[in-house]
View: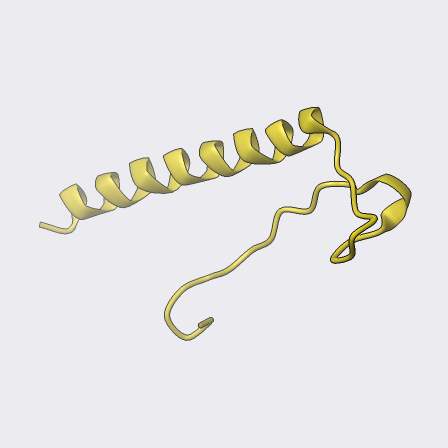
Length: 57
């Protein structure tokens, strides 16, 4: 995948550090913070891509 695009991950905390198990729990406000960050990154990338497409013509 890295040959096609840069990649990144957004980590949000799970209570007690448990993840990928039935005991995993993440607070809604932490999920919202992660979602807001993802939205911000996608918006910035869209603007950057749109701007670079206009300058390359």
